[in-house]
Image (tube, rainbow over all chains, first blue to last red; front, side):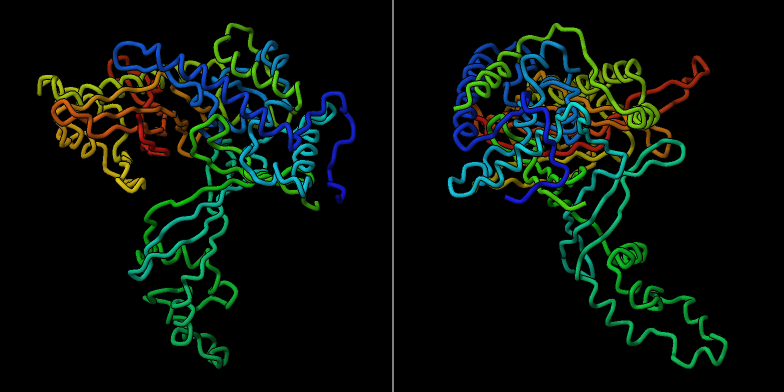
Length: 286
Length: 209
């Protein structure tokens, strides 16, 4: 197994190990426990319009912000601040395990332990006492990729949009489009053969730049790199009302740490290890 | 089998019912703390806003229950519809999801007024809407317009009857956009923060037994 950049070597006593043997049976025990609580919850229904929430909904990571709070070990299952008692009963390493997709076949592959080892290394790296890792939405660590269904020139297309959180000078924050990836604009680039500034235009002092006035898409006149850039084309086509965003099909977050990148996706399923959890951990070269 | 792991997981379940401890904040780097403090509100402000948000969400839930209840007088249902709309900022949309016979989920978006009007006239003889007692509210972040933004998660159980027969039942997790805006209170001639509900997204729908 290759060495993992950023791997934490110390803190062995607090190390928490995901093993092929432990991952599934522990989950089963937990599910049995959950089943007991769930049964109890269904019996004790409150009267009126409110129903007691089944425990799996507390355990489920309901929002991405909740994922961050749990990852950072700042909030418990009910969204309340972590208490001393909670931290003694559920050390951060154990808490982090519930944020990893337990159904990942790589965690239970008898022929290959590399992903299990990687998960353990990442957890050790995260809880290292000298430099515990946290996720901050506003420090360039987090990117969201949105798969959106758009309508362009009467046809539906799927585009991938990279969104990044940005902090403005007044300390307010927003999400911004950082990149658009799609091949649906080929028809626009074709149009560059009919909309252009002629090659001899420099000799006439670019007098024909007035062709820009009233053009249907000024992007045709940009340099090749810019004119074929899907992000620029996306916004210009939006501005020209030729493109409409229809629906959002999928959302995934990528979070970077020194030496690692994790992927967080939403898993909608009927047990506690669900909601916004880690679908992949990857060692990366810094 | 890793005994420590099992014991810990058992504790996690047991901890569901034990919440009476003093809060402990984990340490943040000074840079991170500064950014978080500047972008987000203070803990006390957040608690006030969270409480107000919870009240608004519960108010909305109560209106939904009234509007959906066909056994309620029409006047009361109409009043609930009117009051529910006041909770939202203009143009807010509601996403609804329906489980199709093939197991797929059909999602539709409607403006809030259309959604509420439609809720009154669903093709069931009786509709029972209940909400789980969980309302999860995320932290509040200031937007470029000076308003504060958050989101609340609620879980709704919907049951439709035709006569005495239960014909449709589902559980839907919904994300409610929360906007806190500074609005002028003309009576006191001062500006006050007010909680508005925004777009509502259906994030998960499953068949309820």
